[in-house]
Length: 188
Image (cartoon, rainbow, N blue to C red; front, side):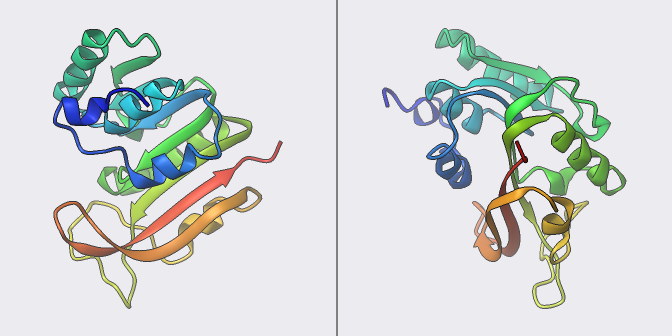
């Protein structure tokens, strides 16, 4: 890979699960849900994915748009979008939603996941990483939404689970919490 745009612009590296997913997913039309400043979108764009990066924060989208324009990247589009709306309107081969669901309106998460599934092309992929709160590991952070044990697996019944775990992880601020991590492939 050429230049690491993330470090050039002072962003965190792409999420490790996005990096891993790219080892098996060929470049395709991709949605980065809750892109923040674009760490995953820039990484995917450099690998040749056509990326639509959405976030509800206009400041984050402005920052990503300025990087994309500075780097003359024609395959990354950043736009303000409230994920709670659950009306994507376009189909994708890959939808990445890493550490995003826990910031959504809890009453909308099922609709958001259903919309992601509907808007994934046959044979396409969904990647979700979301905090959990279970009896053994109550979530120490007051997120609006957390997954229960097995909840994400159930939501993707009928999909091929390429990767699924509910492991303890460390957030970039050092907080230890349990995450559901899933890469699922939609039946062809």
